[in-house]
Length: 320
Image (cartoon, rainbow, N blue to C red; front, top):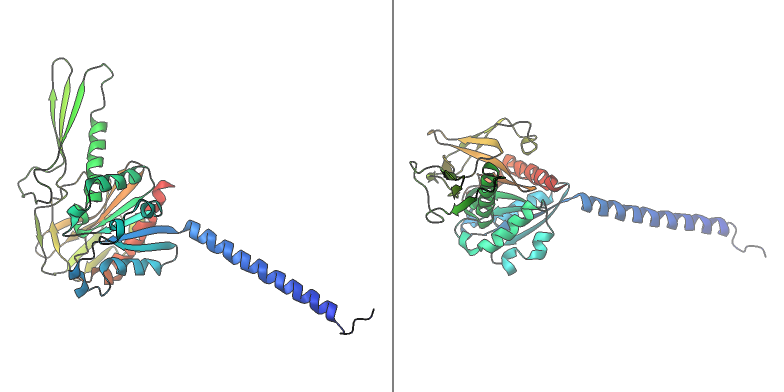
């Protein structure tokens, strides 16, 4: 039978090939997106969402950070708050993130120690990295992570004896949580050691205050130096930069000795602070970054935001 429409077969073949090509291309794009999602760093930004933030951050500080990270390649980001269901920290939410960025200030005690320890267990397993910002030095997850690191340091320093001599380690919290040490207060954590003639060893370990003796929120600028320019957190960051308005924290910071100090911050009046510190906790990492007082536009400035993106990528790599 003669084809009544000249060239129809060729047209149908061409159309079929085009449809197949489009289907293959669509499947390829889907596969590429899935692969990109699999490689993306999953970030959960947790924010107390304090009303005072609204003076500078129209949609809260945590959402500002989340929006910035969403605009960068290689991130999947969710933003949650203290007043969300399960305080934004449901088990499924924590299981679905690689890095937890935490901003808290005046409602720290509303997160239970049990929840903090659950987060630390994920850090120890290498399943989660923690970035604690500014007043999150008193956040429950950061404090529990510092206690865990203190315990690990003590266990390494005083291993169990192979000669069956009893070794006892007792851990003592600070006198009162959420209090400032004085300048003359003995730096915590510290160990008190007792050695007995029969080989017994008793160690009293004083947990850190996770605080410092002085602060000042006058909005004066700070001057930041990169102490480890080769560190991934400092990638693309100027060797020296200024934060235009910020709160002052003054050393000594009562925390376990960090593995790395990446940034140091100074003020015109002579105060200084180790403003970017890293600790290994089990198989995971904790990064403390000091700037971020809620009434100053720290996270409208490009350099602090770049540091957070760098830190999130680096912390996410610790479990791989």
